[in-house]
Image (cartoon, rainbow, N blue to C red; front, side, top):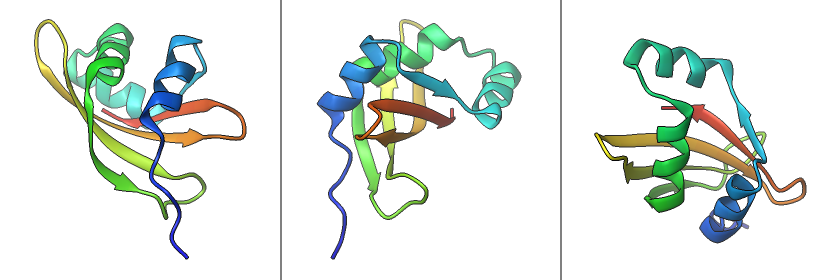
Length: 91
């Protein structure tokens, strides 16, 4: 039985509440590319889920595409419904 996709409204609520874990890989890519945390949050709060990966382990994940004031961003996030926690995997 397949798992349901990430609930984007739950993910956005968790982000709004500051329930975000930044993975080292994401922070390294952001530093390389000059992307701020504010931009990533903006893209996630206003972007669209373009791919779901419900079978990813240890948590379901998704690819979100969103625009900031200055550029488009693709962000891979994982989300724990149980902990209401968002994990930024890569940007």
